[in-house]
Length: 462
Image (cartoon, rainbow, N blue to C red; front, side, top):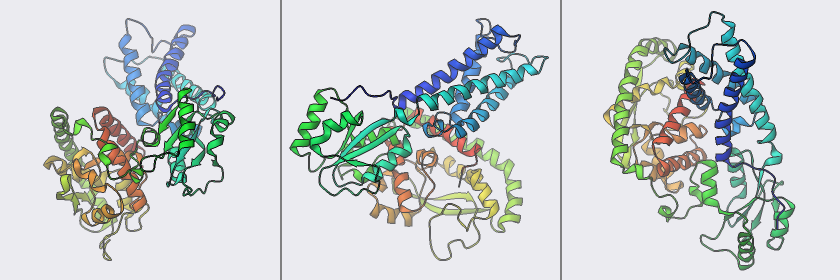
């Protein structure tokens, strides 16, 4: 049987660890600062307990907004440095400017500097320790994949992208049709499985075979032996979903209801009513902001775009119904003179002013009209054009399933996926959309809103 495996924290455990220890270390550092120095601006006492709650609330909120809990970014110190500085700066600013609940500004303004530096240095030291002690490759979770007739390289790339500490060491080929480009992956024989588990400190076996052809008897016996010894053997579909937050539709047969049953929230009247109420309130606020910005956008459009301010386009909505989406124009005139085509990253048809509007998501403001009319929701799959829906429906399994709910102004695919209009990008976005449809609920919606805010503030729109 395998040696005792090296220490490894699962994705959920690492996120919980980051969230808890961020707060504990910051509060401990501030307590020590107040105990051993004359620092008096912030005190952790029963008399002023609400100071602590307010600070923790702001710290958690802005740490989420500035992606301190993104495991990919949390494993790279350059990303951590930038995100910690942003988080601490905004946290301290909001804390100081919150009336009643925060302490009065001290006469000695250096107290504010000590407050800021203590939080910043504490987070940087702890996060550096996290990178060295927990996110280090020596603590990777090592895995063997068992599969037939699928692309192991695709699985490898998806897992590495989603979790830097999930390491696929090799695979067992069950039908001779696996194509592997990665020379670092080892192909194991069935008879050597127990030896490989021990030698390579394997912590998990992921089985992506057996849905149609079943497992061959020798392999089944080996897996059964390991399972009886308490070794974790997991289903590829579930592991893929847990790690990537996507549904692997390319590996699902046509009996799709078996693999991604829809969220109960899709039929929950209280949830849907609350969501609609939020859409109406948010769209009214968004249109008010749009009215304030419109004169400036109009001037920028006259100078930079030299054409109509708005444009409308037919899109596919809930249950396949079409509607006209409204946006600020960001492209040159006659951008599709040669016919419909996908928007691309760094698309030459986008004007310089249009590029700025896209990065800041300003071009999306008129879509609040669609929200107010009920044609769209704040959160959901992005609506696509009929011509592209027809093409993608023929080439990508279950593409039309994304139309069972209202399209959204933002969505899980927009905050998690890369920008791409090609078929490969559309497949990845569909996987995220189906994940949202399956797990739709209040907490996922809040997560998307916070990630969207992060995207807007960091100007990552396309």
